[in-house]
Image (cartoon, one colour):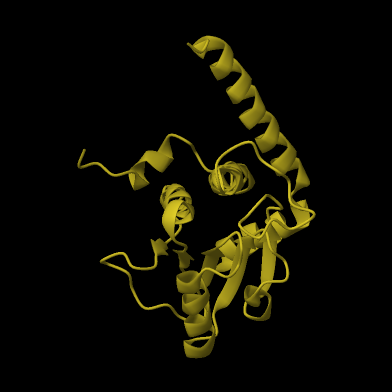
Length: 191
């Protein structure tokens, strides 16, 4: 029989240590540029697959709570993307078929701004995106300089995407001096 409490304490410490190391490894200049792109875009679109998409949907929702027009690719009410919009592509490897295809389509159709959030700086996304926010954690590519993880598959990447989104949202609130209580006007009220 395993000692659940001891194992839980050990696992939670490991996960938190990995997240701290990851967040500290992200280039703040890349995040600043991403924040600037978000704030100047007319609309912000997100694309990813699997758990990355779920993390991006959380970021999409949080930015919407700040009054930013956000959408994720594939939502039933997704509007047309335009040149003055921003597409944020989440893909650790930078080679996931659907996000890569959508980025190519956005580049050729409207030539909007495109940001890649991922781990692999030399993926095919390098030729499509305007710039990259690198979260240098282990992906299916197992690149030499990626931060390793005790967690299954790409959990650390997905968690980091969510936390980076929440950190940027906090910073946007502070930068724009938004009233936290007033933000509830953007929250769903049919609950």
